[in-house]
Image (cartoon, rainbow, N blue to C red):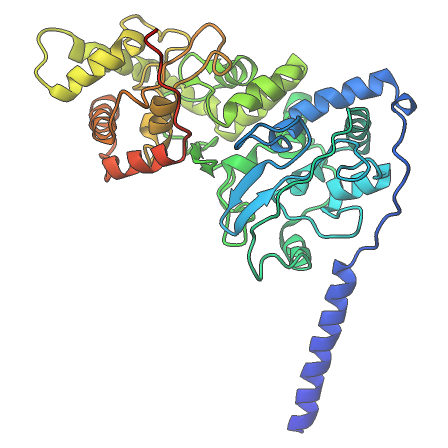
Length: 442
């Protein structure tokens, strides 16, 4: 009897394994001759260009560490808890790129995360979002990529260790977390909301950065848009858990996503800067409005905005209180000497592009990461809005100075508990940045 039970268990296991292999295995799709650019209409290529911008293709397929790579030629380094993954070359080079990929092969990669040769792709490539795109949009992106200049470029090898480097395992990941197919419209919502949902959840994959990940590297379904660490920054929550005292309204979202600055919150910097200026700026204004409309409903701004006038008044008061009369607090003097000239706001509204720090996300997050990033890096004229920049204080402030300034601002510009280990954290952030050149005195 026991032998029969054991045999049955083994049989079930074998059957399950065979079934999984059948699910996980995909055949190669035959290579094709690179399609001539003339096979695509100018209108389709232009639609694809706009879609590729809105999907940030160039941002994740262009090397940025060390010597900058050629656009779309891959080798962008993505640090994950499992090791570094380097993006692929998506120019139409027939040897190192996707020049021999058919439209069907490209569509399968976007929908299912399967390479042309049948290999399972890592979900660092956000096929779990691109799967929601329409066939027409995927075809248009294909047309755009296939009309780019071919670039012969071989990416570096991934450093994902065993057993996570076993590609077949990705099929198990997909079985658990991939919800394949285009999004369906929600009939209870208006057309603008549905368009925003399609863009935010599909093409522009907003939650890929703004949702925390579980131990398997998938977005936590229980915490959508709750915020997450990304590229040594913190992508803040986009839902009602965003801690800033002033709500992200539809208007604030639109200004930030379209122009790089939200008057009541601050400027786009770090990983968000290319999203705005290299991506969303190329999309129709109506699409950016739709994303803003969708995100504003996620954070329930309409029901929370009534508290904003009180929060703004409090922020303006906090902004100026340490600049009146003689000041003996050395940390306040540090702020006054380095920051107040740009960030002090005495009027009824903050100055565009120079956010009031009592309203800025960086001071209200659980960690000072973003604050240290901005102080050390500065904000260039290609980030935020083009008329305003912020200098780097990398060489001007020691880690102890950064800790003092962060502690002072957290205590005087928020109502939250103090941060801890500030000097250590400042040093950790500094180590992630390249050393900027020292300004010449000649």
